Image (cartoon, rainbow, N blue to C red; front, side, top):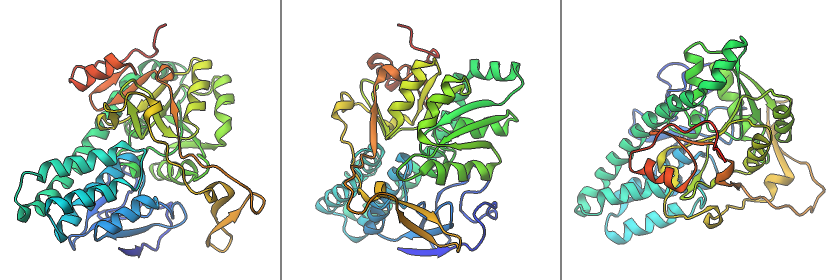
Length: 391
């Protein structure tokens, strides 16, 4: 794994062709450099420093996923796919294929896109001779990335259609559309465009004023560090809020819709997303604010019956007892915010029951979060959901 700093203020647009995300949300967040190596952005340093690094082998891919240098369900799936391709360059027999897949899968248990990406590559190469597997896996990983870009663009278009009524009200009142989001589901969580934020970026490109309420997203602060950074680069109005402020904003009528991403959707429509999402869904329902989950159809796990069957990842208690920031000297530091020796629990995700989800917005359209609607979507028969579930 090789790192390289780009020495420029991260709030400035990056130069064209740099490979990194710039003001255009369609810029790739993972790319193959001129040297043929997989390159991406170290998300643990944003927004304080912009560093790219290369993923040279399976171990580097696994470490990047585990340490959250790369994060976001679609991007994790892509890095896992390339990790498997890189592993097959070293050994490509069936035992090596199975071993590499299991090692990569063990890095993050909740996001289903990792399992999906690994399965897609493994299925592509399984019937091939060992000598052909590495190149076929590499090509399949590249196709997976291309597919993700188009998938996320389409998610944004369908989300805009789902937002028709709030958009009409905002235009009639001559004010911005006001979206609340939780965690980071923008371009750097995917290959491009993002999921929950795809509609925001596309509306902004169309000239529609948008304002985003950004949850800080404790304990890792992905909203504060990543979502605010992305929106600032694109020149989209946004306000950072404490995680517990969203309910008050909804009560006051200052939120037109809530759109979040997710890491897994169970077959019954229950949603696993960053911890804190459940509370936003409860507040949205209490105040009749539309609540949507934007995700690629690959995030819907038909093998998991309900949210009770989703394994919740628990991360280090240190993420709760300490906070990362940038001091006045420009150094990135971790500061303790709890008494020394304080016990802490750190579930990374929670489960939002399907009954609180007004729509699942995928690349195929929007559907209700019900068993029948999800099954129809899986068969290519999904229809735009109504803004709210009746009854």
